[in-house]
Amino acid sequence: MNLPWNKTEKLVQELAWRDYWQQVWVAKKELIFSDLKQKQLDVDDYLISKAVKAKTGIRSIDHAIG
Image 1: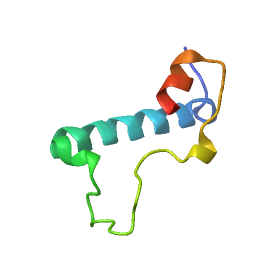
Image 2: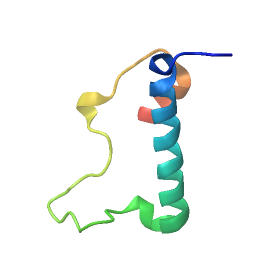
Image 3: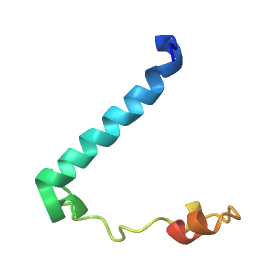
């Protein structure tokens, strides 16, 4: 398949970011679940805000954000 770059650029970017973050996870292990630069002392809740929870009708998505 021979697609022009402008049709594939976004996919390549997304794959590169995915790989980058997977490598960060491999390198940092469980530290990935905490702030890597500095402690966020004023943060009270690390969960998703109730304001952004939605009912999409797609069970797996609703379960993940619920």
